[in-house]
Every structure is written in structure tokens, then in C-alpha cells.
Length: 129
Image (cartoon, rainbow, N blue to C red; front, side, top):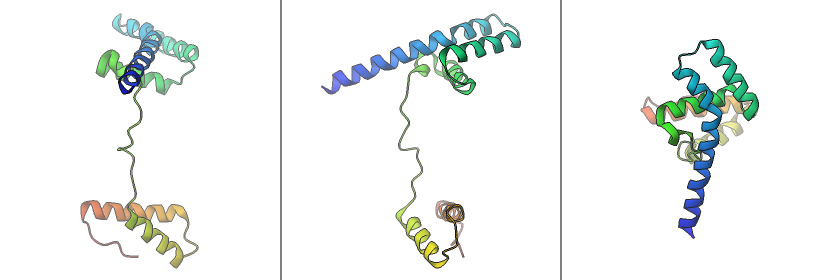
């Protein structure tokens, strides 16, 4: 069952990459022909409107294709390991700080947490309130 799911995921990734390649191929051709910027801009606008994506997304696809070829266009799930996690110690300190100073708002607590994270990562020292 696992292999079937894996091959299905690969098939879906290939289909996604093929759809994206079809969208960016006119732009790639224009870039290969060294077309002027206005024509490339027009092709990008047209591709965005037809595909229903924004310019930033289209730019990401072009960058991914330039860096990794067809495989760069495959859908990749966001990595959960790259998400920043706040340690239990910092959460406890934030709660303690909130109880000590009830008027302290969440942005200030987050800012304080960033300082704590920075000091714990780089051993700058202890954060003093």
C-alpha cells in the first residue's frame, strides 16, 4: 500500500510539474530567443491571468526551473522541520512575564521571546527585564 501511495504522489507531482511547464514554456522560449523585456512582461502577464496565479508564484516557478529543471516544478510539501518552535522554557517565561505585567501585549512578549531565543542560541548572556 505504501508503494502505491508513493507512486501516486510521484504521478501527481509529475502532472503538477507538467502543468507548470506548459504555463512557463512560452516565457522560456522568449528568454531563449533573447526577446525584449516588454514582450517577456506581456507573456508573464498573460500566463498569470490564464493560470490564475500571481507574478510572484510565476517567478518562483521560473526560478525553480532555472535551478533544478523539470524536477524543480514538482510540488513539494512544506517542511515541518523548518518551522521555528518555541521551547517550553521560553513559553513558561512568557506566561510568567504576562502574569507579572498584565498590560504587556503579545507583540512585546514575542519580541522578548526573540531576545531570549537569540541569547540562548548565541550564548550572549541572560536577558534582564
